[in-house]
Amino acid sequence: MDSEYIEVFVEECKSLLTDLNNLLLELENNPDDVETMTSIFRIAHTLKGNSAAMGYESLSSIAHAVEDLLDSLRQGKKKMNNEIMNLIFEGVDMIGLLLEEVIESGQTGSNPEELISKIRSNLEEEKEVENEGGFTVQVKVNPDSQMKGIDAMLILKKIENIAEILSSSPSGEEISDGKFRDWFELNLKGSLEKISDLLGNLPQVNDFRFGKKKDPPSEQIEEAVSLTEADDEKVIEDNSAGYEKTRLGDKFRSENIQSIRISIHKLDELMNLVEELVVRKLKLENTLPQEVKKGIGSEFSTFDRIISRLQDTVMDLRLIPLKHVVDRLPRVVRDLSKSLGKEVNFVIEGKDVTVDRTVLDKIQDPLIHMIRNAIDHGIEMPDEREKAGKSRTGNLTLKAMKLKDHVVIEVSDDGKGLDVDKIKEKAIERNLITEERAEELSDEEIYNLILMPGFSTADTVTDVSGRGVGTDIIVNTVKSLGGSVEVKSEKGNGTAFRLRLPLSMAISQILLIRVGTEKYGIPLKEIIEVKPRSKCEIRRAGGVDRLVFRDSIIPVIHLNRVLEIDSNVDGKMLVIVTSLDDRVALACDYVLEQKEVVVKSLGMLKSVKGISGISILGEGEVIPILDINTLQEVNK
Image (cartoon, rainbow, N blue to C red; front, side, top):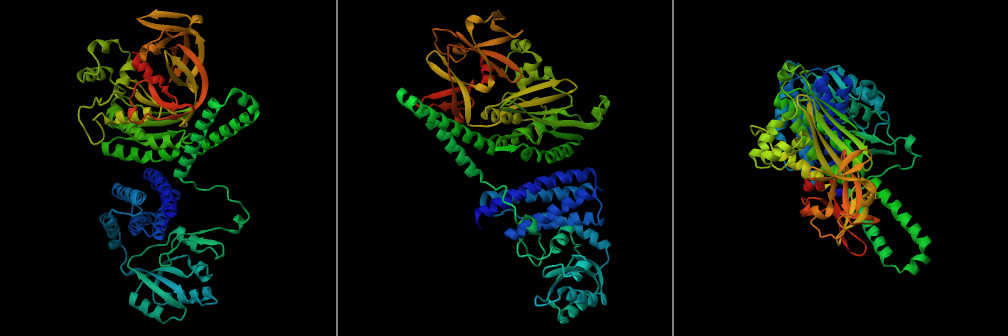
């Protein structure tokens, strides 16, 4: 099968699964919401139909089983309870697993039959209560019929004489009006043998098939098969099951295509080409003789502007709403809180904030780990919260916002907060800090100790947390993206993890500086001001140089000392930069020029403190890009 079709199928199914999970959570909280139930049922039906049309039988089978269970709820034959809800979620998870296998190999590998049997067994309990003798029959009207509506009506009349028609798909009126393609379906109560004899002798019937169970028609099927046939109809169908049809109506005929799907691989290739173009432009700019530059100055400026616009356009194409990741998190919260016996209200703010797709790909695991920590370590058990004068339900919030060229994502809870003394004790026990150093640290600095590798205050290791691995994933992933992590807490009132991430990757504006004989880049977006040291007021306090800057005092980081570089000038220029909510002054020897560069990850060296990436200038010179946040750590 063409990989392009598989890719489109998988992307659509993943989107449907996300919507399905979130709608199921709504239904769990409000079982009587008819509109939500209808939406859920339609998604399950679409997943079943699309999977069957693509030939993925195991996917179609599990989706069909879930659909039947949902339909039983929809028809009021079963009542919502934890067992049924968990069965539905298990089915949704199995669909997700099979989709992942399709992504990896183009085929499904797992066998869902055990789960399907489990769901069917639950449905069989319902059947024992219902009247015996119920079955379905799918009837195909003779395709040569000139009046298929009348022929269908005659078939219905004949059947009504010997059996009870419980329901039909589409409705009886639509069948009599001929508003179906070839097949219609009836749920009957009566003698299967008599119905078989009747249909076998009716000239209006071309073919018929029986089903063993009653399967009331879905609104989705009714809507699809009642559409009038048209030459411009696009159909994905299985005539024996009446799968969903998608029709392009006349009203769309005169419209132009407004959007298309683009493969991520092609987008990455385009990005790489733009990066290469930027590098070549820099090389050309640096190698052209001065007299040639003057002669083509105007044309070169136009060339430069076109490249910049192309770069901006490609960067915009790579920006994807955060909702593609965070919409999957309510299900994570639901499962974790239930497994731990906790009650959690989860709120998401800013899901429409857009970030680079590379960032989006990598932040899912950090977000899940922050949520796990909040539910397991932060939010108390309902009885414990009640004793503390809080509501039994804990509040967990994920909030995203844009700040200049960064996105800040904060995960906060209203739980018990971090215990400063316990963190100190564990840090000393694991030889992460000395007792003397622990006494010198502020509460904010102590909170951030939990981000150190292997750190955990959990007394026991559980399936949810306690190994100290979660914070490693958060810190390492965020730093590999050129971002930073910060922890804030208030005992008894909760904890907040704040991630600061770049909106986009690869091409950046930097300020080129020199320390000794070495050159470094500072991201331009982090710079507040550049000042000669001679015009600054610097005070010495606690063994640290501090700059008086705009009615505040900020620390000075001497780059030659932190980076261990010999310098005769010893930092005659100060570059004032932002670091999360803090400001620091970087002392360098010379400020050279502003550059537009392609920034590459350090790869295996991503743990190098003080450096976030490297850039190669047009002349082939390698320039390290400074990481302001880890520079502060090295400076301590």
